Amino acid sequence: MAPTLRIGMLGLGNVGAGVARLLEQNRELIEHKAGVGLTLSRALVRDPRKARDLGGIQVELVSDPEAIVEAPDIDVVVEVLGGTHPAKDYIVRALRAGKPVVTANKDVMAEYGAEVYAAAEVGGVDVFFEASVGGGIPIIRPLKESLGANRIQSVMGIVNGTTNYILTKMTLEGWDFGVALKEAQDLGYAEPDPTADVEGLDAGRKLAILSSLAFLSRVQPKDVFTEGISRISARDIEHGRRLGWVIKLLAIGKELDGAVEVRVHPTFISAQHPLASVNGSLNAIFVTGDAVGETMFLGRGAGSFPTASSILGDVIAAARSKTSPQATLGCCCFVDKPIQDIQSVETRYYLRLTVKDQPGVLARVAGALGQAGVSIAHILQTPDEAARTAEIAVVTHRVVERQIRSALAALEAVPDVGAVESKIRIEA
Image 1 (cartoon, rainbow, N blue to C red):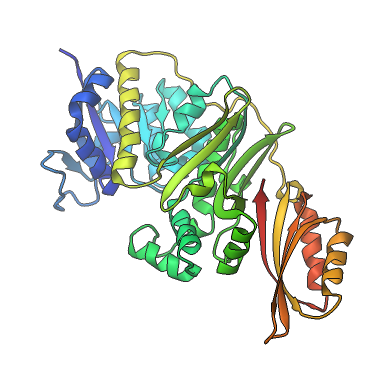
Image 2: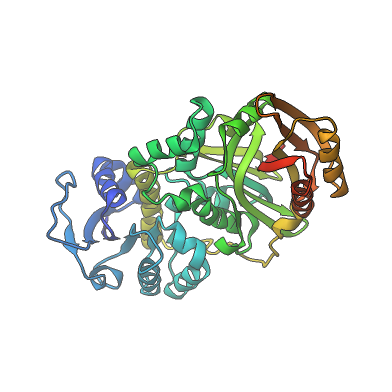
């Protein structure tokens, strides 16, 4: 008879309950693939007396992490607490104690990945974190293994469902940012404090993980340039539509001349790009490799069952590693590559200006841009006769960030320019 592995789970919230239910719902096929029986033996919770609906599943509830982290009768640890502390400490201790760990924790893996991998090496086990990026989308193992023969040239994706939902509503329904954010909060997509989502911080942590795997060099959240969507307006979206573009909050990682470029910001992409039609709370990650070419991974980026799907896929891998020991790939950060400063990143830009509606304004705007070395590719002008102003949308050729910043300073010094309303990067 096949042995049974006992799982200890740190946390039993929405995701943890989803793991318990999905394990019970698909137990036969999960255990067949794992090659062993699986028992969710114990779960760490704040209040073991609190009633929980786990669909009839019986789990021992404990408030002491010692009953899981280093307990001799626990074989595999699943961490779904979230946040960095105390989750990181529990993960590291479990790994050092020789227990494979499955985690959905993007914060720990982005900030402390090196320490986590070092603990796994000490314990002779592996850490599995498929659910840390993209929820139910398989992307971690494909980058580490399936695409392992490729030199990854770029990863570009929609990795935050909250911002994608907001931008979708703004694009398809014409809503303002505040209205779309309020609905996202009402539906549970956005937290009461949405800063981490709408300012790109959540996506930045996920990009740090993806880029570390893709480019084989440690990338930390502090390395990622982040800019949020709170200043995006319906006017920008309308101008983009006229130019054949769609706006998305993209996480973009590239390797160029041995340096790693990592940035998260609102981005115009062609309406024909595969990412342009990824709407609502969906996530999608577009990967380009030198051998495979372009690939895209699409699916639910959050939610109880999608995340549980990735977690239990990792549990299967962890179980097989326990019963049939084999060499694992472990940490993929084999080299130390420099991070490219955002000031030297080159791309195209969309600028939206409010100016006085009078002769010579366009020439003065073009002159200010030209002095900074910025070349204009396209201009849209919309006059407001009542206000005697005009709105100008300028599309530039490729230019480095420091030049566009110099150009913006020059534009703000032009008396006829009322305001620079928007600066949005374009990925051709």
